[in-house]
Amino acid sequence: KEVDFSYCANFDDCRLELLSPLINKLRVLKLRGTRITDGGVMKLFGYEDCLKWCDHVHQRSATTIDINMKQNLTNAKNEIKSCPSASLEVLDLSENGITNKSLLAVAYTCLELKRLSLSMCAGITDDFLDSVPLFLVNLTSLDLSHSSVTSRGCCHLARLPSLQSVDISACTALRGRCIEALITGRHPHIFSACDYDEFDIIDEDQFIIQQQLGLARETESLSQLTSIGARYANGGIDDNLLNTLATYAPNLHTLDLRHYRGNDLKTGCLSPMKMSLRKLRQNGMKVAFTRCDVMT
Image 1 (cartoon, one colour):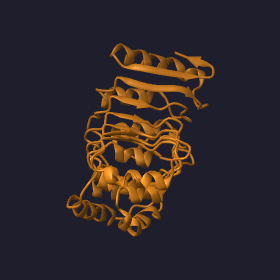
Image 2 (tube, rainbow, N blue to C red):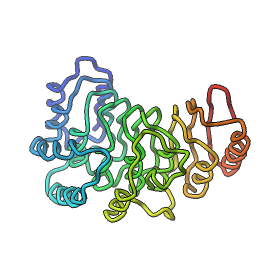
Image 3 (cartoon, helix red, strand yellow):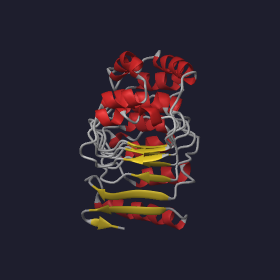
Image 4 (cartoon, rainbow, N blue to C red):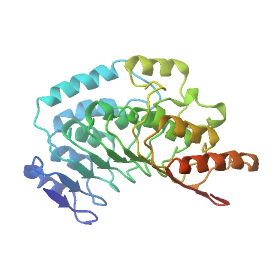
């Protein structure tokens, strides 16, 4: 029930196709650091027929919301329920050249998936995360480190009912607002003005559309996350964020903020931040925070 081909240099799409007869029996499949592509993954899960629809979703702009998007995904989910699905519970596709296209096929067919690792998959963006809450409702652990996801994608992850552990370390747009989006399901336009930069700013109309679609979670909801990896953040880690975590993440016991790369922590901000870190640790949370000139 478990197959591990991690770092097999000659493992490509042709060899991946040989696993097709076993896909409904496997519980664990590890393909980290192989030579598989989107085409191989699509064939493995027997979902080549959805390529055209996947292309349509994949080509959507990362900063626009289509009101029909949720209905399209819901219709697709209803159709997929009647199709044979894979029984995988653990899938590791890290360090491969795959994109949203093949991962949508994974979401459609691996409805029982609990742990998904996509570390160092540069082709993974928010477009894939838009569909995750509708399909991978059993997901408990997700590794998106070194990918291209932003706070928009993190916002959708806040809607996953079973998700407990998320790693977004070293993502291109990783800032404090990504962590806040994971916890609260809120989009960046309602964050403090000091946390804005050139990444993924959306306007208020788009946020209203998100609310109408049910893609934005109410801020009063409490997060079920128990672990967040956010190493190499580019900024936005401050006292306000830590207070938000204390308020909306009562189950969080591990927060990894090591190797902070932001230059927004001035001397005057360190004292209250240290106090917040100390408070979180006193409440039982394991917090790691380091930067080049500060260690607490």
